[in-house]
Length: 306
Image 1 (cartoon, helix red, strand yellow):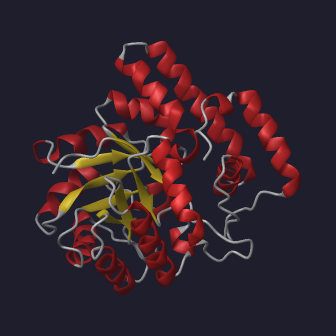
Image 2 (tube, rainbow, N blue to C red):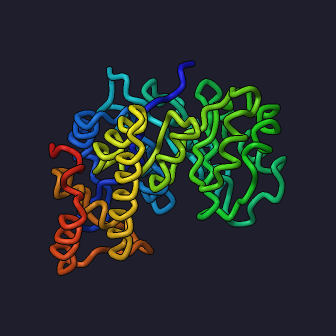
Image 3 (cartoon, helix red, strand yellow):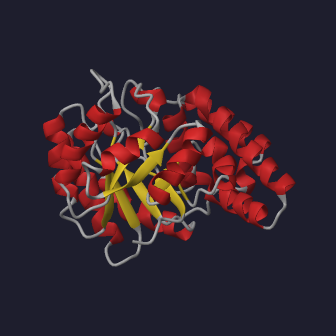
């Protein structure tokens, strides 16, 4: 199986003003991402507010994206993690029924979480077994799950329990563990990196596939950054990475996911509000944010509008 390369967008869940999901936007959202050279999506995860969606809503989102991407080479990774193991199995089995789904993913449970790599592997194995024909990627994001385990230690243990283990969505800043994970089992696994603010460091350490929320709205910045790096123009690459960091830090005070959804609306994809406990950007804050983003240089590197 060819390893994933390029930018994978961690998508938002489009919502109506009342907070109900809005699948009517998915075809346009798909076209928008393709237009901006996005290779696939990570669906129903953190950026999607996946843990604030019902299992039925998550299934509906999977179905809508698979319909939109039908016949394309767009890769869809479906997050199936759930505090209910039974629901996680059900979501995995559902996702496995769609040809367009490239792989499934899950975190370990962040309440009464596993205390050893063996327990984490056993937990993931039951989810992966519900979709045996689909590659399984563990979602490593300890800042949210509280599961602080070395992926370099986890992968060899998990490989004995999970025949369809494909790799890790590595949303962590531990670059030592990243490098060791890349070498696990002689480089057998895909280590798809998150944390967009250190994408350049991940690239320098050999990352090829990148999953992140900012690729929804500023993919051209990262494309330019990687091109600068590959051509040996490190000064330009570093400047672009610093710009990405400044833009993220500009968004955070307004509620990162909400502010990101607002920006998507400015680019032609009105993804709507967020669900509690996420902070909702206020109407009076929107022109202030736009002014700050313009001053930061965001619109020089934003995605092309639909």
